[in-house]
Length: 248
Image 1: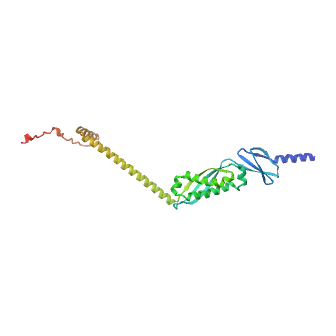
Image 2: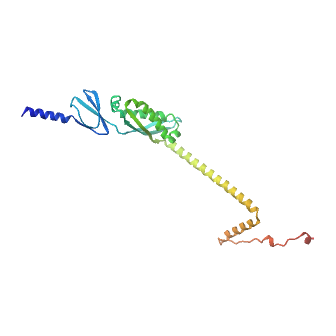
Image 3: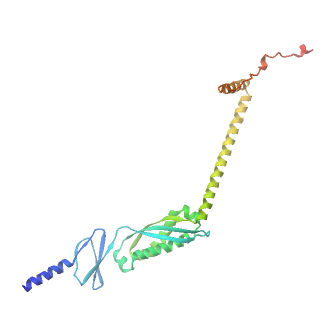
Protein backbone atom coordinates (compact mmCIF):
# COMPACT_ATOMS: atom_id res chain seq x y z
CA UNK A 1 0.00 0.00 0.00
CA UNK A 2 1.24 3.46 -0.89
CA UNK A 3 2.82 5.15 2.18
CA UNK A 4 1.49 8.53 1.03
CA UNK A 5 -2.03 7.17 1.03
CA UNK A 6 -1.58 5.81 4.53
CA UNK A 7 -0.14 9.13 5.70
CA UNK A 8 -3.04 11.01 4.10
CA UNK A 9 -5.56 8.75 5.78
CA UNK A 10 -3.87 9.33 9.14
CA UNK A 11 -3.99 13.10 8.62
CA UNK A 12 -7.65 12.91 7.63
CA UNK A 13 -8.43 10.80 10.69
CA UNK A 14 -6.50 13.26 12.87
CA UNK A 15 -8.47 16.16 11.43
CA UNK A 16 -11.86 14.59 11.98
CA UNK A 17 -10.99 13.49 15.51
CA UNK A 18 -10.27 17.11 16.42
CA UNK A 19 -13.63 18.51 15.28
CA UNK A 20 -15.83 19.93 18.03
CA UNK A 21 -19.27 21.55 17.80
CA UNK A 22 -20.12 24.13 20.47
CA UNK A 23 -23.84 24.88 20.78
CA UNK A 24 -25.19 28.40 21.16
CA UNK A 25 -26.17 27.87 24.80
CA UNK A 26 -22.73 26.56 25.79
CA UNK A 27 -19.15 27.74 26.08
CA UNK A 28 -16.08 25.52 25.80
CA UNK A 29 -12.85 26.02 27.73
CA UNK A 30 -9.80 24.80 25.79
CA UNK A 31 -6.86 23.31 27.66
CA UNK A 32 -3.44 22.48 26.14
CA UNK A 33 -1.48 19.95 28.12
CA UNK A 34 -3.76 20.79 31.07
CA UNK A 35 -3.20 24.54 30.86
CA UNK A 36 -6.12 26.86 30.12
CA UNK A 37 -5.73 28.53 26.71
CA UNK A 38 -9.02 30.31 25.89
CA UNK A 39 -12.78 30.02 25.83
CA UNK A 40 -14.33 28.81 22.58
CA UNK A 41 -17.49 30.52 21.36
CA UNK A 42 -20.41 28.64 19.72
CA UNK A 43 -19.90 27.13 16.28
CA UNK A 44 -17.53 24.78 14.44
CA UNK A 45 -14.24 24.42 16.31
CA UNK A 46 -11.13 22.30 15.88
CA UNK A 47 -8.59 21.26 18.51
CA UNK A 48 -5.36 19.31 18.32
CA UNK A 49 -6.18 15.73 19.30
CA UNK A 50 -4.38 14.36 22.38
CA UNK A 51 -2.63 17.70 22.92
CA UNK A 52 -5.74 19.77 23.54
CA UNK A 53 -9.00 19.07 25.37
CA UNK A 54 -12.14 21.09 26.02
CA UNK A 55 -14.64 21.35 28.86
CA UNK A 56 -18.11 22.62 28.02
CA UNK A 57 -20.17 24.84 30.31
CA UNK A 58 -23.92 25.46 30.00
CA UNK A 59 -24.73 29.18 30.27
CA UNK A 60 -28.51 28.79 30.43
CA UNK A 61 -30.47 29.30 33.64
CA UNK A 62 -29.90 26.25 35.83
CA UNK A 63 -32.32 25.05 38.51
CA UNK A 64 -31.21 23.23 41.64
CA UNK A 65 -33.53 21.86 44.29
CA UNK A 66 -32.75 22.50 47.94
CA UNK A 67 -33.61 19.22 49.60
CA UNK A 68 -35.81 19.36 52.69
CA UNK A 69 -33.92 20.78 55.68
CA UNK A 70 -34.82 20.22 59.31
CA UNK A 71 -34.98 23.69 60.87
CA UNK A 72 -35.67 24.80 64.44
CA UNK A 73 -37.25 28.25 64.30
CA UNK A 74 -36.61 31.04 66.79
CA UNK A 75 -39.80 30.14 68.70
CA UNK A 76 -38.61 26.50 68.99
CA UNK A 77 -40.91 24.98 66.36
CA UNK A 78 -39.35 22.14 64.32
CA UNK A 79 -40.21 22.14 60.62
CA UNK A 80 -38.94 20.83 57.31
CA UNK A 81 -38.34 23.41 54.58
CA UNK A 82 -37.27 22.91 50.97
CA UNK A 83 -36.70 25.32 48.12
CA UNK A 84 -35.22 25.91 44.70
CA UNK A 85 -32.29 27.99 43.41
CA UNK A 86 -32.07 29.59 39.95
CA UNK A 87 -28.62 30.61 38.76
CA UNK A 88 -26.69 31.29 35.58
CA UNK A 89 -23.02 31.10 34.56
CA UNK A 90 -21.81 34.59 33.69
CA UNK A 91 -18.10 33.72 33.44
CA UNK A 92 -17.40 30.19 32.23
CA UNK A 93 -13.68 30.48 32.94
CA UNK A 94 -14.16 31.27 36.65
CA UNK A 95 -16.93 28.70 37.05
CA UNK A 96 -14.52 25.96 35.99
CA UNK A 97 -11.19 27.21 37.33
CA UNK A 98 -12.29 28.74 40.65
CA UNK A 99 -14.53 26.02 42.06
CA UNK A 100 -14.87 22.27 41.72
CA UNK A 101 -18.38 21.01 41.00
CA UNK A 102 -20.14 24.37 41.14
CA UNK A 103 -23.55 22.67 41.15
CA UNK A 104 -22.67 20.77 44.32
CA UNK A 105 -21.11 23.87 45.90
CA UNK A 106 -24.20 26.00 45.29
CA UNK A 107 -26.43 23.23 46.65
CA UNK A 108 -24.45 23.07 49.89
CA UNK A 109 -24.37 26.85 50.25
CA UNK A 110 -28.12 27.09 49.69
CA UNK A 111 -28.88 24.44 52.28
CA UNK A 112 -26.69 26.13 54.88
CA UNK A 113 -28.16 29.57 54.10
CA UNK A 114 -31.72 28.24 54.34
CA UNK A 115 -31.08 26.75 57.78
CA UNK A 116 -29.34 29.92 58.92
CA UNK A 117 -32.04 32.35 57.74
CA UNK A 118 -35.08 30.33 58.81
CA UNK A 119 -33.54 29.49 62.18
CA UNK A 120 -33.39 33.18 63.14
CA UNK A 121 -37.08 34.00 62.66
CA UNK A 122 -40.36 32.76 64.08
CA UNK A 123 -42.63 30.30 62.30
CA UNK A 124 -45.28 32.94 61.54
CA UNK A 125 -42.66 35.02 59.73
CA UNK A 126 -41.61 32.07 57.57
CA UNK A 127 -45.21 31.26 56.67
CA UNK A 128 -46.21 34.83 55.84
CA UNK A 129 -42.97 36.19 54.35
CA UNK A 130 -41.63 33.47 52.07
CA UNK A 131 -40.57 36.00 49.45
CA UNK A 132 -38.50 37.92 51.99
CA UNK A 133 -36.90 34.70 53.28
CA UNK A 134 -35.97 33.76 49.72
CA UNK A 135 -34.33 37.14 49.14
CA UNK A 136 -32.28 36.78 52.34
CA UNK A 137 -31.07 33.33 51.28
CA UNK A 138 -30.26 34.67 47.81
CA UNK A 139 -28.11 37.49 49.22
CA UNK A 140 -26.06 35.04 51.31
CA UNK A 141 -25.47 32.60 48.44
CA UNK A 142 -24.81 35.44 46.00
CA UNK A 143 -22.14 36.89 48.29
CA UNK A 144 -20.32 33.55 48.47
CA UNK A 145 -20.50 32.83 44.73
CA UNK A 146 -19.55 36.31 43.48
CA UNK A 147 -15.96 35.17 42.74
CA UNK A 148 -17.06 32.08 40.85
CA UNK A 149 -18.53 33.83 37.81
CA UNK A 150 -22.04 32.71 38.83
CA UNK A 151 -25.12 34.93 39.07
CA UNK A 152 -27.84 33.84 41.51
CA UNK A 153 -31.11 34.83 39.86
CA UNK A 154 -33.60 33.86 42.54
CA UNK A 155 -34.24 31.58 45.52
CA UNK A 156 -37.75 30.35 46.29
CA UNK A 157 -39.08 28.49 49.34
CA UNK A 158 -41.33 25.76 47.97
CA UNK A 159 -42.83 23.88 50.89
CA UNK A 160 -42.95 24.01 54.68
CA UNK A 161 -43.81 20.79 56.50
CA UNK A 162 -45.02 21.13 60.11
CA UNK A 163 -45.50 18.44 62.79
CA UNK A 164 -49.01 16.98 63.01
CA UNK A 165 -49.72 18.43 66.45
CA UNK A 166 -48.69 21.89 65.24
CA UNK A 167 -51.03 21.58 62.27
CA UNK A 168 -53.93 20.73 64.60
CA UNK A 169 -53.18 23.69 66.86
CA UNK A 170 -52.99 26.07 63.89
CA UNK A 171 -56.29 24.69 62.56
CA UNK A 172 -57.93 25.24 65.97
CA UNK A 173 -56.52 28.75 66.12
CA UNK A 174 -57.86 29.55 62.65
CA UNK A 175 -61.29 28.13 63.56
CA UNK A 176 -61.39 30.19 66.76
CA UNK A 177 -60.43 33.30 64.82
CA UNK A 178 -63.22 32.73 62.29
CA UNK A 179 -65.72 32.19 65.15
CA UNK A 180 -64.58 35.43 66.80
CA UNK A 181 -65.05 37.38 63.58
CA UNK A 182 -68.50 35.87 63.04
CA UNK A 183 -69.61 36.92 66.53
CA UNK A 184 -68.28 40.43 66.03
CA UNK A 185 -70.11 40.74 62.70
CA UNK A 186 -73.35 39.45 64.29
CA UNK A 187 -73.03 41.90 67.19
CA UNK A 188 -72.43 44.77 64.78
CA UNK A 189 -75.50 43.74 62.78
CA UNK A 190 -77.63 43.67 65.96
CA UNK A 191 -76.33 47.10 66.92
CA UNK A 192 -77.17 48.55 63.50
CA UNK A 193 -80.63 46.94 63.53
CA UNK A 194 -81.36 48.30 67.03
CA UNK A 195 -80.29 51.77 65.96
CA UNK A 196 -82.54 51.61 62.92
CA UNK A 197 -85.50 50.38 64.99
CA UNK A 198 -84.98 53.13 67.54
CA UNK A 199 -84.94 55.73 64.82
CA UNK A 200 -88.10 54.27 63.24
CA UNK A 201 -89.87 54.17 66.61
CA UNK A 202 -89.15 57.81 67.23
CA UNK A 203 -90.53 58.76 63.84
CA UNK A 204 -93.71 56.69 64.37
CA UNK A 205 -94.28 58.22 67.83
CA UNK A 206 -94.37 61.66 66.27
CA UNK A 207 -97.43 60.80 64.09
CA UNK A 208 -100.59 58.93 65.26
CA UNK A 209 -101.45 58.23 61.63
CA UNK A 210 -98.16 56.41 61.19
CA UNK A 211 -99.04 54.18 64.14
CA UNK A 212 -102.36 53.27 62.52
CA UNK A 213 -100.72 52.57 59.16
CA UNK A 214 -98.21 50.32 60.87
CA UNK A 215 -101.02 48.50 62.66
CA UNK A 216 -102.92 47.96 59.41
CA UNK A 217 -99.80 46.70 57.68
CA UNK A 218 -99.21 44.19 60.49
CA UNK A 219 -102.82 42.97 60.26
CA UNK A 220 -102.47 42.63 56.49
CA UNK A 221 -99.38 40.48 56.90
CA UNK A 222 -101.13 38.25 59.42
CA UNK A 223 -104.23 37.88 57.21
CA UNK A 224 -102.12 36.70 54.30
CA UNK A 225 -101.47 33.40 56.08
CA UNK A 226 -105.25 32.62 56.37
CA UNK A 227 -104.73 30.46 59.42
CA UNK A 228 -105.38 32.93 62.23
CA UNK A 229 -108.36 34.65 63.81
CA UNK A 230 -107.95 38.39 64.04
CA UNK A 231 -109.59 40.40 66.79
CA UNK A 232 -109.83 43.90 65.38
CA UNK A 233 -109.53 46.45 68.20
CA UNK A 234 -112.40 48.92 68.54
CA UNK A 235 -111.14 52.40 67.70
CA UNK A 236 -111.08 54.73 70.64
CA UNK A 237 -112.22 57.66 68.50
CA UNK A 238 -115.82 56.38 68.31
CA UNK A 239 -116.21 55.94 72.06
CA UNK A 240 -118.28 58.62 73.82
CA UNK A 241 -116.26 61.03 75.78
CA UNK A 242 -117.58 62.10 79.20
CA UNK A 243 -117.14 65.75 79.81
CA UNK A 244 -116.81 67.27 83.20
CA UNK A 245 -120.23 68.91 82.98
CA UNK A 246 -122.10 65.74 82.09
CA UNK A 247 -120.45 63.82 84.91
CA UNK A 248 -121.71 66.27 87.35
